[in-house]
Length: 149
Image 1 (cartoon, rainbow, N blue to C red):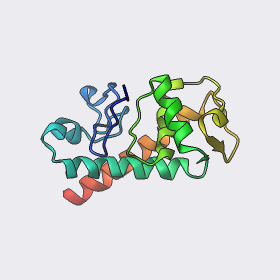
Image 2: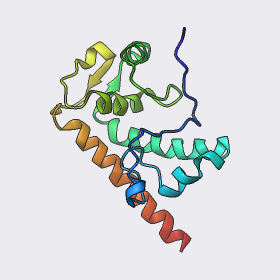
Image 3: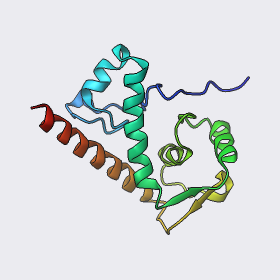
């Protein structure tokens, strides 16, 4: 039976929400606290807007570091490993999910259809890209609320 594929409007929740501890931006999925609280009330279009922003940030962080050489191979390997990723987003964003799921384990990128465009330390790359994504999300949140006030 084929695995259920996520849509562009599917929740980006990773199940490790830090907004319950007072963070304005979740350290897990990088959504704003009000987006998490209101997610079930959002229309499909509103959910897509949030996912589009997160996709844009991930691509910005990853595009100079990696290149997808075989999207189907990558998708199949993620499915076989049971790694949660959003099929409807740019495959480059799936790298974030791969690193999140594998932690600091050494990964044979070629096996996934990924080419590294620069050297990276497998023990730190996950934390580096996660921090950059959080920094972009927090900066966006700050700009968003400065305009609103």
